[in-house]
Image 1 (cartoon, one colour):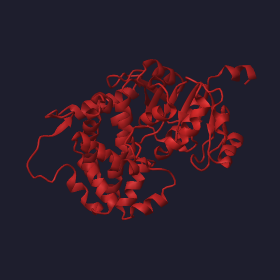
Image 2 (image 1 turned 120 degrees about the vertical axis):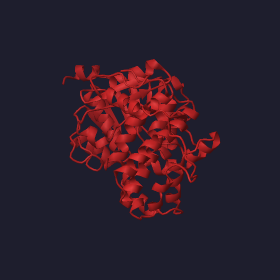
Image 3 (image 1 turned 90 degrees about the horizontal axis):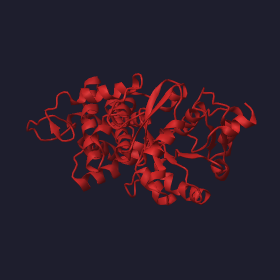
Image 4 (image 1 turned 90 degrees about the vertical axis):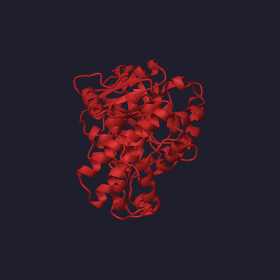
Amino acid sequence: MSRRQDAARPRVAVVGAGSWGTTFGKILADGGAHVTMWARRPELASEIQEAKRNSEYLPGINLPREMHATHHLSEALDGADQIYLSIPSQAVRQNLKAVRPLISASDVPVVSLMKGVERRTGLRMSQVIEQELHCDPARIAVASGPNLALEIAREQPTAAVISSTSQETAEAVARLARNRYFRTFVNTDVIGTEFGGVLKNLIAVAIGIVDGVGYGENTKASIITRGLVEMTDFAVAFGAHHETLQGLAGLGDLIATCQSPLSRNNTAGRLLGQGYRFDDVVKQMNQTAEGLASVAPILQLAREVGVQMPIVEQVKMVLDGTMNPRDIAPHLTTDDDTPQGERTTNGQAGGGGALWRSIQRALDQFRNGGRGAAGDRP
């Protein structure tokens, strides 16, 4: 490629070179962007830059030549047309303090690739970005969906949602963040898109726990189904559209995260189910399992708005060591023996076809550009 051709390519920066940050950098490079990764460790930046590899986080994956890396943050951000953030949620605020002076004169889109809430404040990542960068929310976008990093790095096809309060920003990001194996849809429901990415991690921990215990598919299917109800109730209480939770950022991400051994949250739950204590699980995990850090702040937020989340409550009890992992399944919904109607979506009972319609919407989004859930538009 000539220098002139390279100069014409959109320039993007990805802050964070873990598995998902590096994978998203590959997505962008394969879609035609000139990508500069920022890695905290010089040796990791050097490996990406020189060998086009990230052997620690994406073993066996060759990265595009259009991907570059540096451990100097200013170098990564210089001249970027879009900035992508892929940092553990509990470290975001500290890292953004270093980013802010470097982009204070810029109005480029800032995209969150993170799926967590801040433990101390309960804020979503887009809210933390808005606070720390002092930027217009219309500049901020979030990406979410059934996106297991290693599968995408292997170029197995999938889809995601880009969400922003500004349709223009969402579409600008979506135009860059797509290629032959990665399709992006857009919506303006940032609350639902972000909370979908957060809440599915908590349900995935529960799935991992019962898997570690040795329970089978019936138990896991029950938790996934009832977990989707908890996710929807919670997100809608905070202003989300229930359709968003039935799309890629909700149901789609929930299915992928719960059923795959590549899921960090599923793996963490499995270790808990096998009898490991919380501290031992954290030590064994090579990467951050966001669900573990999000349980307590999500439950606090749920109590503030009066939303019941019995599955997540049981996960917290297992984390705290006050419940035997084997006892989580009998407490899927309630300790009350009174028969209850099956609520399947947004507080409604008796909607027998609601779950199937949700699944159908998610599947439609993968088929030939189907529009899928209302509000998710390609």
